[in-house]
Each structure stands twice: as C-alpha cells, then as structure tokens.
Amino acid sequence: SPAPPNHYFIMIVPKKNRIAVYSLLFKEGVLVAKKDFYKPKHDDVEVPNIQVMQLMKSLTSRGLVTQTFNWQYFYWYLNEEGVAYLREYLHLPEDIVPATHKKKAGVARVGEKPGEREGAGEGKKMGAPGEGFGRGRDEYRSEGGGGGGGFGRGGGF
Image (cartoon, rainbow, N blue to C red; front, side, top):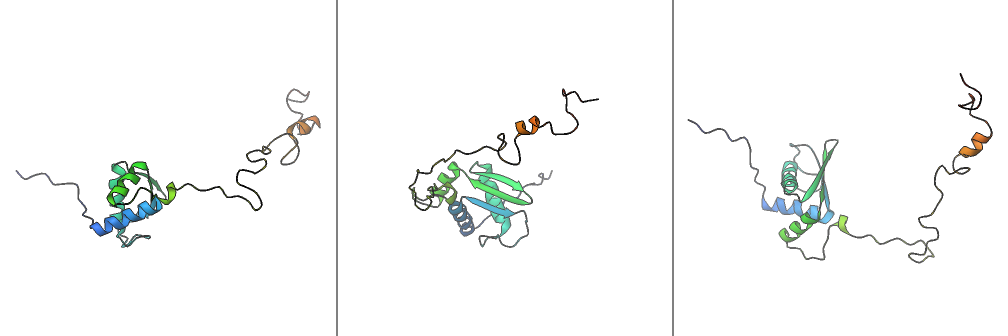
C-alpha cells in the first residue's frame, strides 16, 4: 500500500538570509512583517517575506520571541532567551544589546540637574472638587442646579 502523503513542507532558508534576518532582529529587538506570502522582498531586509515569516515562526515556537498579529501585520518582540540565542548564533560580544533592551537616560531640562525636578510625580488629579473643567461637584450640588429636582430633594414622580 502507498505511504500516506506528507502534509507539511520544510522551507530551506539560505544561511545568508537567515543571518540577515537574525542580525536585523538582534539590532532592533523587534521585527514587523506584513502577512503576504507572495511579497518578493521584506520591507527592511533583502530577503523574501515568506522566509522572514518562516524564520520568525521557528523562533516563536522555540519561545525566543513573542508574536503579536494585528491588522494583517506580524509583530515579533525579542525576549531575554532570544537575545542569548542570537548572541551565540551571530557570535556577538556580551556588551552589544538590542535597541529595545537599552536603558534610556533621563533627560534633564535646561538649567536643572538630574533628579532635581520640583514636584515630579506630584500634581493635581483630574476631577478634584473646584478644579479642572468647570466647577467642582460639591459647588454644583450646593447651587441646587442640575434640573429635575433629583432624588431625595422633594421633587420626583
């Protein structure tokens, strides 16, 4: 009897294309691809779009990237395990990190020293009585405004 047909296909991606995609992913920390299997080239790297999607599908199944799909676009985010894997695969030193994993330094305003901002984190909250948009709730209620009499004010049905 004939053997059952093989229902899956293996895509062989050339090593130079794999390295190009992995290098871009490591440099940026994220990768975006339109869900278009017939697109001849990816927008950011000179590799067929389907090869990019298949490489990222492989990394997703191994838990090295997190995948999000929205409005016919795939978004892949490199996690810590993925950083370690790509660093080893691409033979990169430990001090090189993806752009999304770099710490941003706080930006100081002109004439102030870092950490010296007055009132940082403090401020008026929206909806505080007498502040914000228009009048406060208590002031509005004390005027007897609001039409219709309200519940418990003698008016009603």
